[in-house]
Picture 1 (cartoon, rainbow, N blue to C red):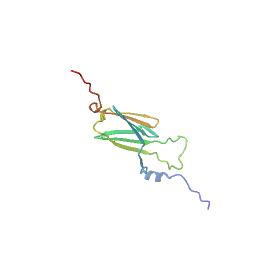
Picture 2: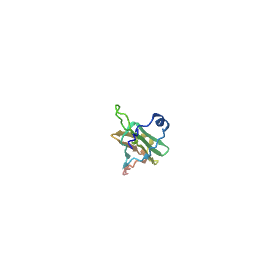
Picture 3: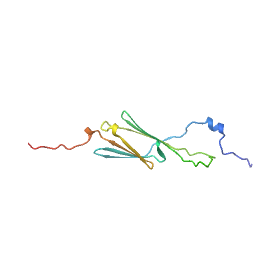
Picture 4: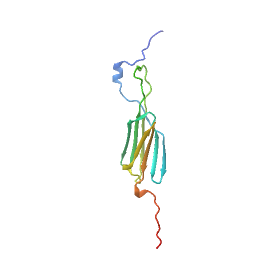
Length: 131
């Protein structure tokens, strides 16, 4: 009845079970548009700059990030059920956007991408000359 159960995972069991069972989380985004382009703001809590990847291939913008959970160095993990989430979101970019001029900033878990329009696609007013 007073059976003691060890909560730690044996080293050999931990070494053989290396599969990643985390699911992928789609981060929430807000997209704002103006005449010069769009701004995309993505919520990526716990993701640092070195764990964030932003790629553009053909017409697809891909955002991938992995959050990290800080563990105090002086503590030993007894039971670990929390998994740091993997974030992934893809967007199709139209031909009117300049892929080579995308800017990215990450501040306190918020990623801001500025995606400008190509110069030819930006609206402009044509001056009329009286003659």
